[in-house]
Image 1: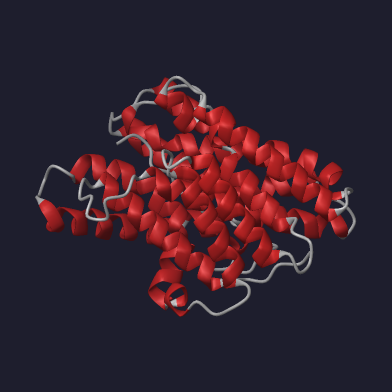
Image 2 (image 1 turned 90 degrees about the vertical axis):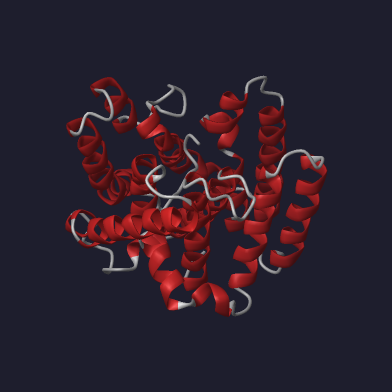
Length: 319
Protein backbone atom coordinates (compact mmCIF):
# COMPACT_ATOMS: atom_id res chain seq x y z
CA UNK A 1 0.00 0.00 0.00
CA UNK A 2 1.50 3.30 -1.07
CA UNK A 3 1.28 6.43 1.03
CA UNK A 4 1.34 10.02 -0.11
CA UNK A 5 2.60 13.02 1.81
CA UNK A 6 -0.23 14.54 3.84
CA UNK A 7 0.41 18.04 5.23
CA UNK A 8 -2.61 17.74 7.54
CA UNK A 9 -0.66 15.21 9.60
CA UNK A 10 2.11 17.74 10.10
CA UNK A 11 -0.52 20.21 11.25
CA UNK A 12 -1.77 17.64 13.72
CA UNK A 13 1.79 17.13 14.98
CA UNK A 14 2.13 20.86 15.53
CA UNK A 15 -1.02 21.06 17.63
CA UNK A 16 0.10 18.06 19.68
CA UNK A 17 3.56 19.43 20.44
CA UNK A 18 2.23 22.88 21.26
CA UNK A 19 -0.25 21.33 23.69
CA UNK A 20 2.59 19.46 25.41
CA UNK A 21 4.70 22.61 25.66
CA UNK A 22 1.73 24.52 27.08
CA UNK A 23 1.32 21.86 29.75
CA UNK A 24 5.00 21.79 30.69
CA UNK A 25 5.16 25.56 30.81
CA UNK A 26 2.58 25.31 33.63
CA UNK A 27 0.09 27.42 31.69
CA UNK A 28 -2.64 24.73 31.55
CA UNK A 29 -5.03 26.99 29.65
CA UNK A 30 -6.30 24.06 27.59
CA UNK A 31 -7.07 22.07 30.72
CA UNK A 32 -5.65 18.88 29.16
CA UNK A 33 -3.07 16.42 30.34
CA UNK A 34 0.31 16.67 28.65
CA UNK A 35 0.16 12.93 28.05
CA UNK A 36 -2.50 13.41 25.38
CA UNK A 37 0.13 14.82 23.03
CA UNK A 38 2.12 11.61 23.04
CA UNK A 39 -1.02 9.59 22.35
CA UNK A 40 -1.49 11.58 19.16
CA UNK A 41 2.08 11.02 18.06
CA UNK A 42 2.12 7.32 18.78
CA UNK A 43 -0.94 6.77 16.60
CA UNK A 44 0.61 8.87 13.82
CA UNK A 45 3.90 6.98 14.00
CA UNK A 46 2.21 3.59 14.01
CA UNK A 47 0.17 4.48 10.95
CA UNK A 48 2.98 6.04 8.90
CA UNK A 49 5.71 3.56 9.75
CA UNK A 50 3.44 0.59 9.09
CA UNK A 51 2.23 2.07 5.79
CA UNK A 52 5.82 2.54 4.63
CA UNK A 53 6.86 -0.94 5.77
CA UNK A 54 3.88 -2.49 3.99
CA UNK A 55 4.88 -0.68 0.82
CA UNK A 56 8.46 -1.93 1.15
CA UNK A 57 7.34 -5.46 1.97
CA UNK A 58 5.12 -5.56 -1.12
CA UNK A 59 7.99 -4.30 -3.26
CA UNK A 60 10.33 -7.17 -2.50
CA UNK A 61 10.73 -7.36 1.25
CA UNK A 62 11.71 -5.17 4.16
CA UNK A 63 15.39 -4.32 4.26
CA UNK A 64 15.94 -4.29 8.00
CA UNK A 65 19.43 -2.82 7.89
CA UNK A 66 18.34 0.06 5.69
CA UNK A 67 15.28 0.72 7.87
CA UNK A 68 17.27 0.80 11.10
CA UNK A 69 19.93 3.02 9.50
CA UNK A 70 17.27 5.51 8.37
CA UNK A 71 15.88 5.62 11.89
CA UNK A 72 19.33 6.17 13.37
CA UNK A 73 20.23 8.92 10.90
CA UNK A 74 16.95 10.70 11.45
CA UNK A 75 16.69 10.48 15.25
CA UNK A 76 20.03 9.85 16.88
CA UNK A 77 22.23 12.87 16.03
CA UNK A 78 19.85 15.43 17.52
CA UNK A 79 19.34 13.28 20.62
CA UNK A 80 23.10 12.94 21.12
CA UNK A 81 23.49 16.71 20.88
CA UNK A 82 20.77 17.34 23.45
CA UNK A 83 22.06 14.74 25.90
CA UNK A 84 25.64 15.96 25.53
CA UNK A 85 24.53 19.53 26.23
CA UNK A 86 22.72 18.54 29.43
CA UNK A 87 25.83 16.69 30.65
CA UNK A 88 28.18 19.56 29.79
CA UNK A 89 26.13 22.13 31.72
CA UNK A 90 25.84 19.76 34.68
CA UNK A 91 22.09 19.18 34.45
CA UNK A 92 22.34 15.38 34.36
CA UNK A 93 24.71 12.53 35.14
CA UNK A 94 26.61 10.30 32.76
CA UNK A 95 24.49 7.35 33.89
CA UNK A 96 21.23 9.10 33.08
CA UNK A 97 22.68 10.23 29.76
CA UNK A 98 23.58 6.64 28.90
CA UNK A 99 20.06 5.46 29.72
CA UNK A 100 18.66 8.03 27.30
CA UNK A 101 21.15 7.19 24.56
CA UNK A 102 20.45 3.44 24.67
CA UNK A 103 16.67 3.98 24.84
CA UNK A 104 15.82 2.38 28.16
CA UNK A 105 14.27 5.33 29.99
CA UNK A 106 10.81 3.82 29.62
CA UNK A 107 11.90 1.12 32.10
CA UNK A 108 14.64 2.94 34.02
CA UNK A 109 13.56 6.11 35.78
CA UNK A 110 15.50 8.92 34.08
CA UNK A 111 16.85 12.10 35.59
CA UNK A 112 14.35 14.94 35.65
CA UNK A 113 15.98 16.87 32.82
CA UNK A 114 15.85 13.81 30.52
CA UNK A 115 12.50 12.58 31.76
CA UNK A 116 10.89 13.20 28.41
CA UNK A 117 13.09 10.64 26.63
CA UNK A 118 10.89 7.77 27.81
CA UNK A 119 8.66 8.22 24.76
CA UNK A 120 11.66 7.95 22.44
CA UNK A 121 12.45 4.64 24.11
CA UNK A 122 8.90 3.41 23.54
CA UNK A 123 9.18 4.36 19.87
CA UNK A 124 12.58 2.71 19.53
CA UNK A 125 11.28 -0.58 20.88
CA UNK A 126 8.51 -0.39 18.29
CA UNK A 127 11.02 0.31 15.52
CA UNK A 128 13.12 -2.67 16.58
CA UNK A 129 10.32 -5.22 16.94
CA UNK A 130 7.60 -4.33 14.46
CA UNK A 131 9.62 -4.71 11.21
CA UNK A 132 10.45 -8.25 12.33
CA UNK A 133 6.81 -9.18 12.94
CA UNK A 134 5.07 -7.22 10.20
CA UNK A 135 5.86 -9.62 7.31
CA UNK A 136 4.02 -12.41 9.11
CA UNK A 137 0.96 -10.21 9.73
CA UNK A 138 1.11 -8.91 6.15
CA UNK A 139 0.73 -12.46 4.80
CA UNK A 140 -2.69 -12.72 6.47
CA UNK A 141 -5.88 -11.58 4.74
CA UNK A 142 -6.35 -7.91 5.57
CA UNK A 143 -9.55 -8.53 7.53
CA UNK A 144 -7.83 -11.10 9.71
CA UNK A 145 -4.88 -8.78 10.28
CA UNK A 146 -7.26 -6.00 11.39
CA UNK A 147 -8.97 -8.37 13.84
CA UNK A 148 -5.61 -9.52 15.24
CA UNK A 149 -4.31 -5.99 15.75
CA UNK A 150 -7.65 -4.91 17.19
CA UNK A 151 -7.47 -7.73 19.71
CA UNK A 152 -3.90 -6.75 20.63
CA UNK A 153 -5.07 -3.15 21.14
CA UNK A 154 -7.86 -4.24 23.48
CA UNK A 155 -5.58 -6.55 25.48
CA UNK A 156 -2.84 -3.90 25.73
CA UNK A 157 -5.34 -1.29 26.90
CA UNK A 158 -6.70 -3.67 29.53
CA UNK A 159 -3.14 -4.51 30.65
CA UNK A 160 -2.42 -0.83 31.12
CA UNK A 161 -5.54 -0.38 33.23
CA UNK A 162 -4.43 -3.21 35.53
CA UNK A 163 -1.10 -1.60 36.44
CA UNK A 164 -0.98 -0.68 40.15
CA UNK A 165 1.40 2.28 39.75
CA UNK A 166 0.84 5.32 37.58
CA UNK A 167 4.49 5.48 36.50
CA UNK A 168 4.41 1.90 35.23
CA UNK A 169 1.17 2.49 33.35
CA UNK A 170 2.35 5.74 31.83
CA UNK A 171 5.81 5.28 30.35
CA UNK A 172 6.70 1.64 29.61
CA UNK A 173 6.58 0.13 26.15
CA UNK A 174 4.21 -2.64 27.21
CA UNK A 175 1.75 -0.09 28.62
CA UNK A 176 2.17 2.66 26.00
CA UNK A 177 2.12 0.55 22.85
CA UNK A 178 -1.64 1.00 22.40
CA UNK A 179 -1.39 4.09 20.19
CA UNK A 180 1.28 2.48 18.03
CA UNK A 181 -0.90 -0.63 17.64
CA UNK A 182 -3.95 1.42 16.72
CA UNK A 183 -1.98 3.35 14.12
CA UNK A 184 -0.63 0.09 12.69
CA UNK A 185 -4.18 -1.24 12.53
CA UNK A 186 -5.25 1.76 10.44
CA UNK A 187 -2.48 1.03 7.95
CA UNK A 188 -3.77 -2.54 7.54
CA UNK A 189 -7.34 -1.43 6.81
CA UNK A 190 -8.98 -3.28 3.90
CA UNK A 191 -10.10 -1.15 0.98
CA UNK A 192 -13.43 0.54 1.56
CA UNK A 193 -13.33 0.00 5.33
CA UNK A 194 -11.80 3.33 6.36
CA UNK A 195 -14.80 5.10 7.85
CA UNK A 196 -16.40 1.98 9.40
CA UNK A 197 -13.04 1.14 10.92
CA UNK A 198 -12.72 4.60 12.41
CA UNK A 199 -16.23 4.38 13.82
CA UNK A 200 -15.38 0.99 15.33
CA UNK A 201 -12.23 2.45 16.89
CA UNK A 202 -14.23 5.26 18.50
CA UNK A 203 -16.91 2.91 19.82
CA UNK A 204 -14.36 0.47 21.19
CA UNK A 205 -12.40 3.26 22.86
CA UNK A 206 -15.51 4.57 24.59
CA UNK A 207 -16.25 1.13 26.00
CA UNK A 208 -12.67 0.42 27.03
CA UNK A 209 -12.15 3.83 28.56
CA UNK A 210 -15.13 3.59 30.87
CA UNK A 211 -15.04 7.37 31.18
CA UNK A 212 -11.98 7.08 33.44
CA UNK A 213 -9.04 7.04 31.02
CA UNK A 214 -8.44 9.80 28.46
CA UNK A 215 -5.87 7.86 26.44
CA UNK A 216 -8.26 5.74 24.33
CA UNK A 217 -10.28 8.85 23.52
CA UNK A 218 -7.18 10.68 22.27
CA UNK A 219 -6.07 7.64 20.27
CA UNK A 220 -9.48 7.17 18.69
CA UNK A 221 -9.79 10.87 17.84
CA UNK A 222 -6.37 10.80 16.18
CA UNK A 223 -7.37 7.73 14.18
CA UNK A 224 -10.49 9.52 12.94
CA UNK A 225 -8.49 12.61 11.92
CA UNK A 226 -6.00 10.45 10.02
CA UNK A 227 -8.83 8.75 8.13
CA UNK A 228 -10.57 12.04 7.36
CA UNK A 229 -7.34 13.71 6.24
CA UNK A 230 -7.01 11.16 3.44
CA UNK A 231 -10.65 11.46 2.38
CA UNK A 232 -11.24 15.20 2.52
CA UNK A 233 -9.42 18.51 2.92
CA UNK A 234 -8.82 19.78 6.45
CA UNK A 235 -7.86 23.42 5.83
CA UNK A 236 -7.04 24.31 9.42
CA UNK A 237 -4.43 21.57 9.69
CA UNK A 238 -2.72 22.53 6.43
CA UNK A 239 -1.90 26.13 7.30
CA UNK A 240 1.74 26.83 6.46
CA UNK A 241 2.84 27.78 10.02
CA UNK A 242 1.34 24.60 11.48
CA UNK A 243 2.85 22.43 8.75
CA UNK A 244 6.29 23.92 9.40
CA UNK A 245 6.03 23.37 13.15
CA UNK A 246 4.97 19.80 12.45
CA UNK A 247 8.07 19.28 10.35
CA UNK A 248 10.36 20.44 13.18
CA UNK A 249 8.27 18.85 15.95
CA UNK A 250 10.93 16.24 16.77
CA UNK A 251 13.38 18.98 17.68
CA UNK A 252 10.65 20.89 19.49
CA UNK A 253 10.03 17.83 21.62
CA UNK A 254 13.71 17.27 22.35
CA UNK A 255 14.36 20.83 23.46
CA UNK A 256 11.06 21.90 24.98
CA UNK A 257 11.42 20.12 28.32
CA UNK A 258 14.94 21.35 29.26
CA UNK A 259 13.91 24.84 28.13
CA UNK A 260 10.69 24.72 30.14
CA UNK A 261 12.61 23.36 33.13
CA UNK A 262 15.08 26.26 32.94
CA UNK A 263 12.68 29.11 32.13
CA UNK A 264 9.30 28.35 33.65
CA UNK A 265 10.04 30.21 36.90
CA UNK A 266 11.49 33.31 35.24
CA UNK A 267 8.20 35.00 34.32
CA UNK A 268 4.52 34.58 35.07
CA UNK A 269 1.57 33.50 32.97
CA UNK A 270 1.41 34.12 29.24
CA UNK A 271 4.80 35.89 28.88
CA UNK A 272 6.51 32.82 30.32
CA UNK A 273 4.63 30.51 27.93
CA UNK A 274 5.53 32.67 24.94
CA UNK A 275 9.19 32.76 25.97
CA UNK A 276 9.34 28.97 26.27
CA UNK A 277 7.54 28.42 22.97
CA UNK A 278 9.68 30.93 21.09
CA UNK A 279 12.94 29.54 22.49
CA UNK A 280 11.86 26.00 21.72
CA UNK A 281 10.95 26.83 18.12
CA UNK A 282 14.25 28.64 17.61
CA UNK A 283 16.32 25.72 18.92
CA UNK A 284 14.28 23.20 16.91
CA UNK A 285 14.64 25.23 13.71
CA UNK A 286 18.42 25.44 14.12
CA UNK A 287 18.60 21.71 14.86
CA UNK A 288 16.47 20.92 11.82
CA UNK A 289 18.60 23.00 9.45
CA UNK A 290 21.96 21.80 10.81
CA UNK A 291 22.50 18.56 12.70
CA UNK A 292 19.34 16.85 11.42
CA UNK A 293 19.92 17.91 7.80
CA UNK A 294 23.59 16.89 7.87
CA UNK A 295 22.78 13.33 8.89
CA UNK A 296 19.55 12.93 6.93
CA UNK A 297 19.31 9.78 4.88
CA UNK A 298 20.45 10.65 1.34
CA UNK A 299 17.54 8.80 -0.30
CA UNK A 300 14.94 11.19 1.18
CA UNK A 301 14.05 14.59 -0.30
CA UNK A 302 14.95 17.54 1.90
CA UNK A 303 12.09 18.76 4.00
CA UNK A 304 9.90 15.72 3.45
CA UNK A 305 11.54 13.01 5.56
CA UNK A 306 10.03 14.16 8.84
CA UNK A 307 6.59 14.56 7.36
CA UNK A 308 6.61 11.26 5.52
CA UNK A 309 8.38 8.79 7.77
CA UNK A 310 6.47 9.19 11.01
CA UNK A 311 9.52 9.86 13.13
CA UNK A 312 8.61 13.20 14.65
CA UNK A 313 7.51 12.19 18.09
CA UNK A 314 6.64 14.15 21.19
CA UNK A 315 5.97 13.07 24.72
CA UNK A 316 4.88 14.64 27.95
CA UNK A 317 7.89 13.63 30.02
CA UNK A 318 7.88 14.40 33.71
CA UNK A 319 5.61 17.32 34.81
